[in-house]
Image 1 (tube, one colour):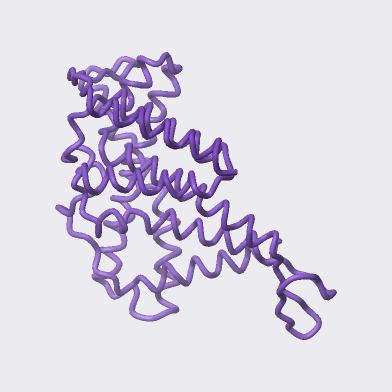
Image 2 (spheres, rainbow, N blue to C red):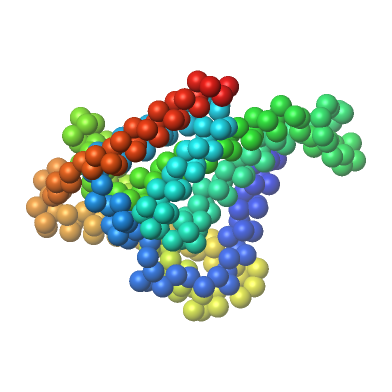
Length: 283
């Protein structure tokens, strides 16, 4: 297992360095938060969207039914792309990162190492065997679709509901105030980290910091070592700006009333009944 972790770490490092010639997105490029505000289903009641997404997620991860998982993937994609009018190309781009780690996990589940011949499919390297079994393959397929379904349900929520509306729903649902505010601050801090990393990388690229593999390794180390320090400074500035705007230990959001659309509500109920029916009929 330790060898596998080392191999995956090396692979991720190489993957990162191979992206050195990538053209980074412009500052005005649309991100996930932009689409959450400009989605065509943004005017749907946030309580409906949050609870519906949570129900889809729970149904998907609580069962091992592949047909249900595929249905959740299709439902989430249909609502996000066709009703929310999110471009398909952008939707697939958002899926890249979770799918990358999902594939790595599937590979880790399937690969086993042994010095003796094992049942199933194997590759022999001298006296060393890398093998997998039908049971592992079946398990990984189920896991893939369950995870993909959960991702689809979460993107349905993230690409249609701004973070402030999600926070409001959590507050009205009696979630602990500390958890809610930590969630919001962590969400904002993620953007601070990504913006800081992007600025540092652009700065290094302008000085030919990724001109070859050896220089890329050195530049990569510089980014990692300085990222935390610079991000902490920016986070402190972020906190100071909150205090200057009246922050006294509680984050408050303005709430906009959005009526419950009867057609939307009926459609959600029917889709949930359909998914429950799949659970009961297809086993």
